[in-house]
Image 1: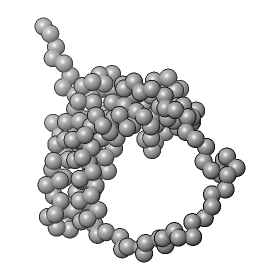
Image 2: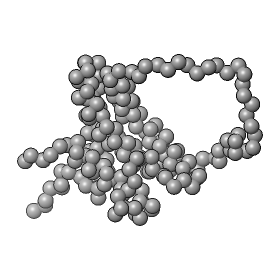
Image 3: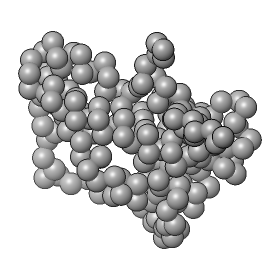
Image 4: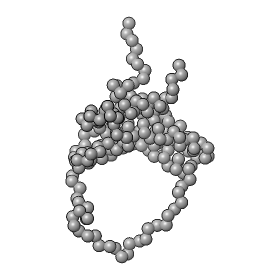
Length: 185
């Protein structure tokens, strides 16, 4: 008798885990954009879920970027201060604009929800942009090749040097668990 596949993918099944995470993101982004413009109480509620969805999407985009083959970028020219040139001040430079008040919670929520919807709609472009960033970091021998805020867990530190997807898949797995909520069965 053949056992059915585990319905919940693990980090050992990156394609299934990534597909589930993307499905969760798409569903949550649709729900979050529906809340936009419906008052402060719903914006507050949506703001609690935004960070989780943003974290899920960042990891999916990063994993997609790791699979892209991007040529190493051309070396960037040195900044004027590094070359020894001193930039001449422009006497006709406009004064900086007056500080504007911080947008309200509803506006901030709407902007973040729209940014998520844009990222989901243009996933390939975001992955390519991330792949270029990773290639640029590597070409400059930067210590940090991942834009994700959290360093790999100690048990993943060594493997992350050669297989950067491993710790991200573990993070993605935990985030998916959080998004799906506790198992009450």
